[in-house]
Image (tube, rainbow, N blue to C red; front, side):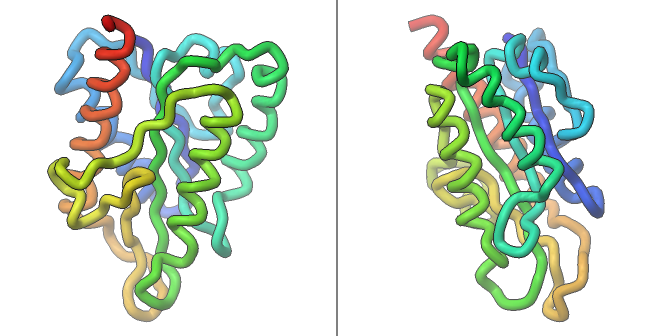
Length: 181
């Protein structure tokens, strides 16, 4: 199984989430080929090669980071040829900002899901039965809070990283079941 985890990170939080998702994938499938890349490093060929694709971003003003958006817009070339159809995908995001609503994190995750579905991919959510859901889960994927009450960055919680590992393992198990059905 080839797994691509592509992310954009400003303060290292999304990168930490990507690493935790990779650990969950690796725990479930030790022989999987993992590719953890920033959005800027990710090439279209990385999408083509992958069986499983995770996309992660911080929330910027209620939406995904521009670096991730730029990468995803470039995948229209793959869309024209249906090259991602049938692949399995998962999404994750982190947000700070003021207030307890997450600054647009749900909207950001839905936007990432929209891209997966536009490509004909199988989007995998985060079931409430999984470890970590109560701390950083939402039906769309992992949603981690990384801002304090003043809106300043703070360390990502261990509970959120647990949710990432759980979600990574889950998405890979779904992909495995689909491949061997």
